[in-house]
Image 1 (cartoon, rainbow, N blue to C red):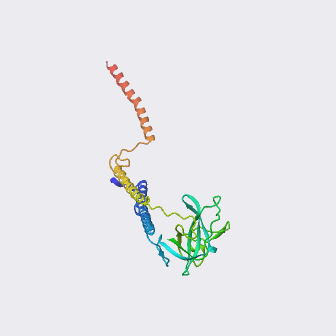
Image 2: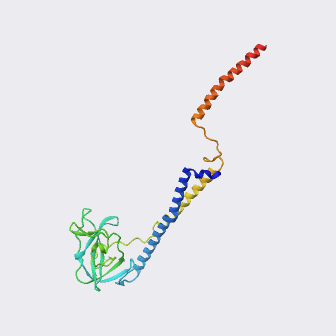
Image 3: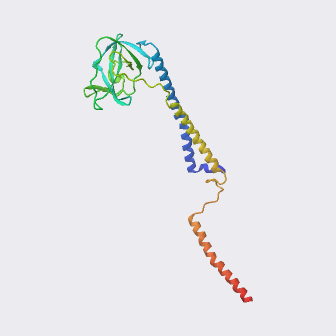
Length: 272
C-alpha cells in the first residue's frame, strides 16, 4: 500500500501538527486579526464622527468617543491617579476626578495626564475648579481591572479607570476631557486614525496555514512515489555490521580463488 507510511508514528505526529497549526491559523488567528481590524475601523469612524459633530447633552448612555457636554461640579475629595500609564512614549499619571452633574449623576472625568517626578512619584498639579462648570468630554467605557484605590505618596491611586475602583455610587464609564475645558490638564492625545497592520496580519496567518498544508501534501506525494525516502519498495540501506560482514566474506573468497587458480596452473604443467 503506497500510503501506508502515513501510519508510522513520525508521520502521524507530523500530520497532526500540520493540521492543528493550519486550523489554528485559519479558524482562530486570522479571524482574531480580522476582528481587531474591524474594531480599529469602528474606532476611527467613531472618532472622526465625534470630531465633526456638536456635543450631545449628557444622558444615561453614550457611544464610545461620542462628544458629550456635561454640567455640574467636581468632587476633588474622591480624586485618584491612574498609574502605570504611557503617553507619547513616556510614563504618566492620568488624573481621574469624579464629577456630579446637575441632574444628580456621579461620573468619572479624566482631566488629562501629568508626568511623574523622579520617574515614580506623582507631581503637584492644578486642582479642579470649585463651583458649577460646563465641560465637554469624550465618552469612554470602563477599563477591565477594578482593583480598589490605595494611598501612596500622599495620593489615591488606581490601576485602571473603573467606577468600582474609585468609589460607590459612581456610574460606569468615564469622560475624557478635550482641550481648553475647566479643570483640564495636559490633554490626552486621540488614537491615530490609521487602519494598522491587522488586516495584513490576518492574510499572513491564512497564508501560513495554506503553506503548511501545501508543504504536507508535497512531501506526502513525494514520499509515496518510488524512490521516496519512506517508499516501501526502496532498497534497504545496509547496516554497518552487514557491510563489515560482506567485506569479510569477500576477503575469505579471495584466497580460495587464488588457490583454485594455482591448482589449475599446476595441473596444466603436469599434463605437459
